[in-house]
Length: 95
Image (cartoon, rainbow, N blue to C red; front, side, top):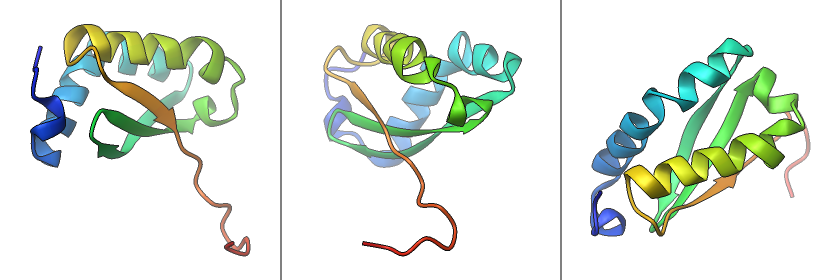
């Protein structure tokens, strides 16, 4: 577990997050036809976007998100917070 997660470079942060998610999170999402992408990391905030079936599944916010956050807190840094971002719809006007 890194006590200096927020001070690492983005490449090291992404590597640590991916390593923590590889064993339990990614395979579980893939079994249901989904996945996630790390969109950004700002300090302790890890911004993700669900992919595939996970993007439209209601359980993503209620069960999967807390599991992802607890996994990262246990394996990377207890201060991590996971934030789900949504991509703008192609062709939609931007605010």
